[in-house]
Length: 292
Length: 225
Image (cartoon, rainbow over all chains, first blue to last red; front, top):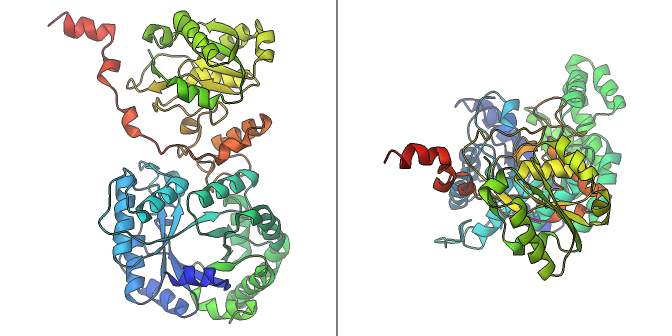
């Protein structure tokens, strides 16, 4: 059983982190980020060709974490691979000791750096979860028997800030029915938004890890409000980060993130930190959150 | 010509569970030519439904169901039957089902699957599109096609890029799944969004030999042989 599964089933408040593999094969910066997270989080998400921008692969980097005695959450999107490749990668993952899988449909290819690419979307997040379930039952999607049964801890994502939220809740129900055992959310900057959302999904009885993205500047906040679906940064936070001097901004950013976690930790079962490169602030964030 | 095949009656009946009174709308275009529709087939279907305990309130033939203006004009003449019906069974390609669903305030169910002819069918649709996926799901989705309205052709609901009714790929492009959600909500059928459809069978998009064997093909191939 993965440590993430163990912790969630034991009812512990769980902290996960995230790294994004580089565009290329120089992994110095990624290595530093990994070290900042070591010992501070239960598991580390490895993003899969995040934002449709081509980069080093999530399966290989997830295995790299396993070899360093760290636990990955292997993110899988359906945009780039069909059901043959996805199932094969799942088997490869299981074979090298990866259990936590985050099943995502994936951003559309036109949003990334290869907009002319063919989007695959043979499966979507829900049918990928069904596929994982099938493999865990010892059969592939075509019903063929597997030699050796892989063990996974499948999870999925949800965005509490999308409007209208009802179709998202319905889809979350579907993901649970398809086998999702935990959820990580899109970034939340307004505790009231999470509170309202958690009321709507209470009946699903599935652990939710709230997403925290470090607010790096007022400009970033305004950009996200305008361009990132379902992300809403309230004005008072934009003012707070905007008022910080450039040299103090990193500290202020960690303080805001820690405060948000502190305010939301009783509403959900964990936090998923997406520091966007500022993993060196992990201690600060967890300190402010009262989780250090 | 668009190529269609009949859905098994059991699938049609399952989709119409609870819809006791049915209006059948048939396209007198391609399905008639392809012998999956037309007056004779529609009458046959009406009998089959009656035998299964459904009340068929009327049957209507429309020349080209892909032409929404025609659909509206023609259905306006049978408003009473339409009002009396719980649902409409549409004997046409996926475009015809969507065009009908856009014009009437009732659940519309496809009687046919639209299978690939390889494109270039020469029809005259408005915004409705059909990719000839071969496994019509319009019954589940309120008569709005998720394969052609969703940029990712998703079958299981909106993705995380759907916000404030729009799609992540283009400004002002409506999210297909938002439209499906709104339509089903208005019809009190949101439970449809909890159903897990079959994973798609892409083999059905391959162009079968019979779909290539048109009259033109016969003239070219058989006459010359």
